[in-house]
Every structure is written in structure tokens, then in C-alpha cells.
Length: 194
Image (cartoon, rainbow, N blue to C red; front, side, top):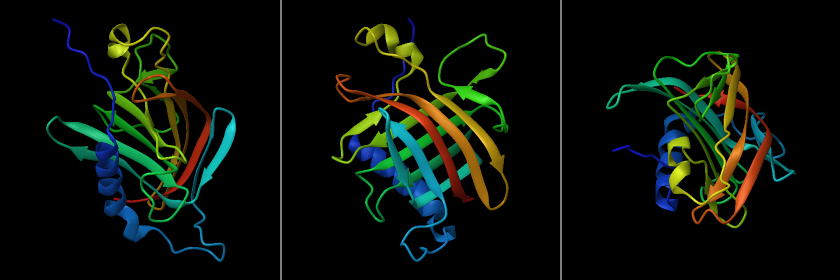
């Protein structure tokens, strides 16, 4: 019997993920500038509308976790300070080995020599109303409504002890799969946490 996986984060799961990642590195985020935001950002287009989030912009790279043994990386930002259920974008990458720079990870199987299938690549987004959207797993597509796509891409372009930079895109759906958002032109410049 084929085991299927699908991403269908509940609101509570999203809050737990954001809280875990944010508390692990929030102390390292520089204070606000005169405008009230940091120099770091998470920028993307949601169905063609540009979004730029400049609060709690932080990430981690290659944090080893056990059970199962996996390397986890996350990248996130929020529009408003201390608001975790609206206008929040998070990209999470799970790999079997340390993530590499300047390669493109996918959340689907491919024979392309320029794309690397990740163990998991999740895009999670809460819009301005608080409605949650998330990516789906390729293995779940046969069991979901027709026409859904699995096309997430992530490229980490720079990483040092201070910051992380990269690009991302993909298609995400609400919990009923009736609404979708095309995420394009995604880019981040985030404070690196450990």
C-alpha cells in the first residue's frame, strides 16, 4: 500500500512552527530602524500583488534534527511585529544532507539536472485576513481534487554567520483546496539564527 503525505497545516500547527523558529533566533534580530522595521526582509508576489515583510525576518540553515535524521532550514518574515496569524510567510526545507548554496530545491520528483528534490519543501502563508495557505506533497496529488499543482522552488544564494539570502516560488492552497495563491518573485534577506 502506498503511503501518502500531504501538507495541510492547521492554524495551531502554523503557530507552533512559527513560535519555535522565532523564539530560537528572535534575540539575534537587530532592533527596528527609524521606520520601525529592520534591514532584513521577506519579499514576494501573491497572485501578482507585491508583499514585503520586514518584521521578525530570520532564518536557520542546516539545523540537524533527529527522529527522523534530517537537516532543517527555515526562512520567515512578518508584516507586523508580534502578529503571528496574519501576513506571515514561512518557507521550510528538509534535506537528508546539508543544504547547498546556489542549487534549486523542489518539492517534486524530477530528472532535471538543475533541480534537486528536497525531502520536504513547504511554503506556508497566512494572508491579511488570517486565512492559511500551504503547499502540498506530490505524492498526495492523486488523492486531491484535479488540477492542483506541486511546483515549489527554493534557492539559497548566500549564507554566512550574519545573514541568509535566497529566492522562492510555488503554488499554495487553503485548507479546502478551493483557493490558491501563486507565489512568484520570492526573495529573502534574513538575519541568521542558530
